[in-house]
Image 1: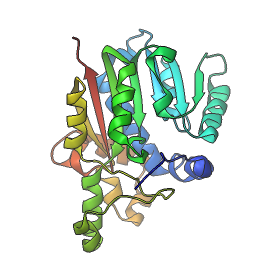
Image 2 (image 1 turned 90 degrees about the horizontal axis):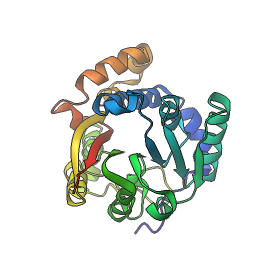
Image 3 (image 1 turned 120 degrees about the horizontal axis):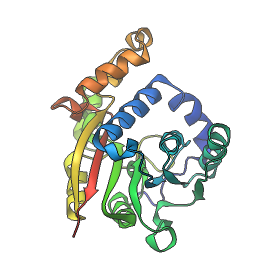
Length: 260
């Protein structure tokens, strides 16, 4: 049984080079960014929003939002990730006032931080010891009418990937949980399950998208031959459409907290 949330201090440099600095990282960032701008036009309306990036990683998404003029709070469990985010902002936006927090998601609370117009929670949920309970607590810092941008590792895509690779025993065993401290997500999640959690907490799903619905199924040679811009174009075409969105390595949900 998983006892602790995954801390990526040991992998910060590897993430920077092999994930965020790779084509698959560029594709992921591009899909999520375009989905956000399309679904939440207020992000580019000129109005300053208060935004929390819970599990900010290396800070790329926060940087883009800060460039649009928004107020940012960035947090991460990994001290090294927070340091990388600080360095990115110091280089790109040295005059912008951004708050950085080194700590767990569970420590983020309304009393200390206030409420937010938008909370980003990207590629964190699947690495938590208690994903449902932690998500429910985090939702408390979103104001009524505010929004959640949630991206998580797609269990259905993981099953399918094992099937097409011939790992039928693993796929049929339903044992897809990673080991503590490893590189396989602790809790790959299904779309319907997570949407149910959000609904129970008073959130309405505004839009859904699959992230890397095509790229992860291309063979290596084809990936190397295709320009990232070309991949992003075709990914965007299919990311929000059935049945393709369900094939994404990640799923991206944008949900709004209902007014009471």
